[in-house]
Image 1 (cartoon, rainbow, N blue to C red):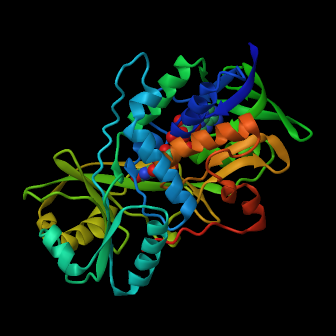
Image 2: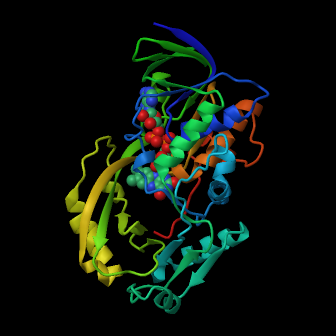
Length: 393
Ligand SMILES: Cc1cc2nc3c(=O)[nH]c(=O)nc-3n(C[C@H](O)[C@H](O)[C@H](O)COP(=O)(O)OP(=O)(O)OC[C@H]3O[C@@H](n4cnc5c(N)ncnc54)[C@H](O)[C@@H]3O)c2cc1C
């Protein structure tokens, strides 16, 4: 049994933990000894590999928009950031756009969001039903009042690939990845001192980072802290369509259902209502959900989707912040050496570059240097003052 000591111990090596490890280890001046503890060497069971891979700029909160703007810049130059010895990094970043569709009652929100997006410099086009019909002749626009289309930057990517690119680069910069599971945290007063691991080893640290995704609340509990982030199950279904559908952005129906092309097929999903959304960590797929709640909406919006074949399906987990479904970033107010990077719901992949940079800044310089993300502090969970992201649906 060993007991190694590190400056920074990151719990969880998904896209968030690995992005933090990458940005921290880029700083050579402080010469920090960094460990990432990850229990799943396949990287298949965390949220990252199971995500839809989407990157969008069409948020209503400036901070969320700015995080995605940084992601776009980062992804466009990913080889400069994550390439090792000149090798090209390809995460299949496809700038296919996001198209939000709205019915009459949703138009005020769509227009409001568009104003915020314009102020933040996001290139988004407002479309009326005629524009929609012209651009997307395969779409049923009869019950639509308008839409917004992101003109640059928005799209999708290979989420597992981005996770691995961060990880490999972090390792090349001296970070140690330990394949192990954190079972407990030892706290002394207001300080976490060590993590005990399933192997019997333990790891001492000056700073601990909770990047455990959907299991973040379990990690917080090990330090006798309550983190109001819960695991919520989401399904993704892939399907093929006999008829050719023209160029298709990631389209968000007024019902909240989304679909986008994936190679020669499509993927689709939809969040359940709050009453049908219990805490859940299993991977069982409810195929009735596709038949009853997905396919009829698809067929209504795209007549060609009347005749589709479901090809595959999987379940993954959101780390769902109960207060406002937004990220929780920064130290716990009573345990300052315990840093949180959790609760991203459906946005963590695209936020990973900005979050990695932000948490590294907090650890290295004790404050945000580039993008001020203090609105996402842990304190807000205690005061109940949430950050409201107002979506069309
Ligand atoms: C169906 C679905 C679709 C999504 N679509 C999008 C999208 O389009 N765009 C977007 O931006 N985001 C999307 N997301 C959200 C995104 O996937 C997550 O926000 C993001 O992957 C979170 O990364 P993470 O590193 O926090 O979590 P994870 O990837 O889950 O990583 C956490 C890691 O911690 C490890 N861990 C947990 N407990 C321990 C322990 N005790 N000891 C050691 N290791 C531990 C786990 O094994 C895991 O690998 C989607 C999510 C789902 C489920």
